[in-house]
Length: 446
Image 1 (tube, rainbow, N blue to C red):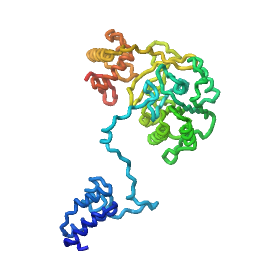
Image 2: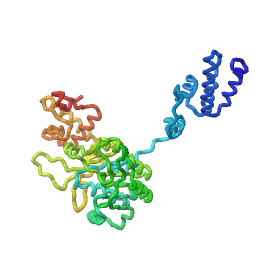
Image 3: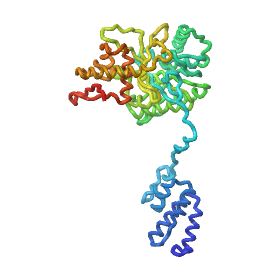
């Protein structure tokens, strides 16, 4: 090819037009770049852009290749071959979707297992609570409700389908007793629970789904057994794993391990199109703080929903009901947070004791509660009384406001809900005061 003459430039253009692969395209970019550096007048950019598009390269990548005179990913020195002999440039690209493709269709609605939206489908929900508080019982009640036609859980509807309950703490005989007590108390027919599948791993060894090995999570044979069992059950809607301490043999305080473990369980939720409920015990600090957390914060951050079953807060001098429980939604990526469900142990199961709302009874109530909260906050601020948003603080705002006649009959729950709503609207804030080392915060109207 006569590179400097007309014929040479014509032949080069024809060669570019015949490019059918990325290596050929990069080679032509290099040839043109070299000829231009040697002083040969060439204008082949349009031809090269067409060739780059023909082999499936994006426009910005083509421009970079033309400017560099070759593969823009290529270093100036030849890349060293990897130990396994794999071509370092032959990397599989991530699958991408253009956002413009969403314009032609509506987004699918988020799906939940239950009407309360505590259990998002295809995700892992973490239920924590102290030993003996009733986590297993509450979870078993949800599985029974799923398996029943038109079943209800804590007074609300729940999707019907199959449920798999894997328990590492109770033998099958104890699970039998619990199921029977719940059925008797709720007037249920045990014969209608064909779609409730129970597994007892109590007293068995090697039940861990995953262990820690060289700083990474390693799935164990139990994971594959669980995965296969889930796949064998038609129309599975819920998988309950009771509990984390038995099914995980790793450092709960290691952030990366916690995320990997939740990721394993999430893979099952996605494959089976079900909701996974993982039970766990909180740490002592988690109970004292009222958060119900344990180990690394990654457990809370990795799940999309976290529930905390606890005993209700007792007012000063008030005797606590030993059968009372509170189920609180501590985290929800796809639903409101802060919901409380008041429960009571009765006849071998937990029942919801909250009064059902009358239709339309909530109209205007939220606005009223917010107005009253702001009024009381301003009154206390003017008097030099600092109030806090921390439920465990002695000066917790809803608790302090309960002593004021201006609260207009609002309950602590209504005041707490108003406070959260005002936070979300930016109408109030927690401002630091006092010594910087003390880190004390008080509520202020913005």
